[in-house]
Length: 366
Ligand SMILES: CC(=O)N[C@H]1[C@@H](OP(=O)(O)OP(=O)(O)OC[C@H]2O[C@@H](n3ccc(=O)[nH]c3=O)[C@H](O)[C@@H]2O)O[C@H](CO)[C@@H](O)[C@@H]1O
Image (cartoon, rainbow, N blue to C red):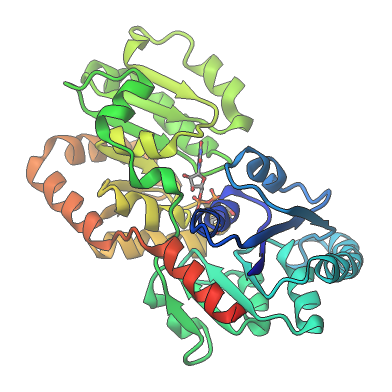
């Protein structure tokens, strides 16, 4: 089959797309996979696609930009780019003749969806979050089916349009063990491990809240894997330069070994991006989830979903100064709570999301 996969912007859109591409590539059925993302759009999909172990037959680039939530001048410029993007996507599809298309979000998907509609190519959209943002709402109008992480997304779409497939995990996630994770990050197996992550771009407010309590965490003997995000790395390094005993502190700007970080950890403090719905749950890892204020509506829904299922605790940005340390201590040291949260998280996880989405895409291509 000839299949086109498109995603744009952040890791939260691109990794699910790559996870599905990986399943299709490894099926051994010789599918021809092509990828389409932004050109000059500020997204880092090209970098992630190039670094990933799936050979794409071609990489198409389209102009795109945000239309909602930006000033009118930027919206007009984005619309011009989208117009060009439709033409670029249309030409790309003409050259590669995909039989079906999978889109996982980001503005780069909009011109692709329009071009696919003109060419009459069946389209599957994957929504990683529970509640769709403006891009997925637009894309879903052109899509035959919408794959979702959980069936709680059904009310946002046409009756019968969604298939709850589960979150698509990358292949490496399936085999990671705690021991491998401990070896990878140089951790002491006898100690508890706390993972801090602000999603694919990092989160300064979480970084600062964690830096303020690091001396207490390290004095407790907790070891900390702290993924700061590239943008906040220098500031965070300077802020933690004088830690009294830094041997338990493991800072990183970005990790391409997230599966091992999860596998090695006992608790995560994280933004409530969609990955928490699929990745924390797969590892049965309890989370303290801090929704990103500027994606508040969507991330709050993700965090609340996990909290309502007793798999996580939601904390808001402004609560962290007072409650982050006591919440970490409670979830780390109260064995009853910890065991119950791990089981609750695990019960929500699924290993089959990528395969389910790949099957759905192939069915549509046929
Ligand atoms: C600010 C913003 O708009 N965030 C959105 C963005 O978040 P973001 O891109 O952060 O998305 P997610 O939290 O869903 O996913 C992050 C992905 O990056 C990976 N990772 C992260 C850090 C790292 O060092 N290495 C690494 O590989 C994680 O394992 C995960 O697979 O897309 C998500 C999916 O639509 C949305 O839910 C978020 O609301």
